[in-house]
Amino acid sequence: MILNAILWAACLLLAAQLLFALVNGRSLSRPGRRARKVEGRPLVSVLIPARDEERNIEDCLRHVLASDDAEFRLEVIVYDDDSGDDTGGIVRRVAVEDSRVGLMRGGEPPRGWKGKCYACHRLAEQASGSWYLMLDADVKLGPLAIRDTLRSIVKKKAGLLTGFPKQNTGTWLERLVVPMMEFVVLCHLPIPVVSRSQSGAFVAAHGAYMLFKRSAYESAGGYEAAKDEMVDDMAMARAVKKAGYRMVLSDMSRHAHMRMYHGAREVWNGFGKNMFTGLGGNYLLLAALLLWYGVLYVLPPVTLLIGAFTGDLHLMLVSGGAMLLGMAVKAVCDAYSGLPAWNGVWVWATICCTIAIALSSAAGGIGGKGHEWKGRRYG
Image (cartoon, rainbow, N blue to C red):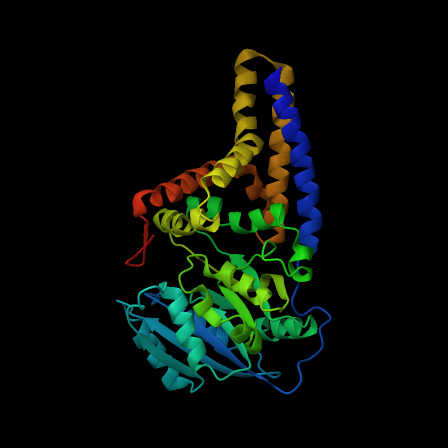
């Protein structure tokens, strides 16, 4: 009786979640649509922090340099963050071919700084543009990406535009877990409020693509304001809002694509270092979220099997309905993100893997053990 009541409640919550995701996804900004040309050909500084990125950096640079720059001028600066591979050599070879490309060499960050934050800070110090595009080295831009996002941020009079590139995935854990970034935003964050409210509670960002108006970046205190933050993109978004500027959350799936992680180990370590920190290190909030996701997405397939073995038709029907609603929620989120909607079938496996990584992430915070990423340990 109690189990059936829980499942009926799950069905109602999932139906509400589906409606929220459908409406929310339509609220995402789509850069370039009905936006006017940018006047004055401003200089855009594309700033790329890169540590051990020899497999990505050349493609990243080639795509940036192929941008349609009729409405803006372009400079590209790469910060080689003490790489142990040929990242710097590749950048130097590209720079010989195109004078718009520059290279900065870096070492270990000073005490109190996270590596990427310090790299972005140093890049901004060298930038000459009136716009800063902080771009991850594994992002491949379309030819209109910079133009259209520049048009969009000018039209909306914002200080920061950020968005989620389309995620390319290879291994099974990539396919299951990487799309959860957009899933969480579309299911829980009221996107229209992001640009309308100055509250730091209503922010979402993706550090792979962060287009700042220079004045907004400086007023926010730059990356020095987030120097010890593991989830630096969210911290910077809050700082921009605190400085009195609007921010825009955009759908970048038509303009950029990336493969964040290569293989299960990178997925586990990459999400593990950020997940618990992104919850503010709050164990109570973590427990509440895991309970929420467990009841909505993991319990129904379990009770479906129980109903099948016990012959409880009513339990099977309610469980099946909850499963279909959960799949629909995930399918909607994946479709808005430019991914195959049929991936929603595996939502229960996605949630199970996400819960496992979240628990590992929380365990890393116990005793200050932390997590390792690209040869550096983060607490």
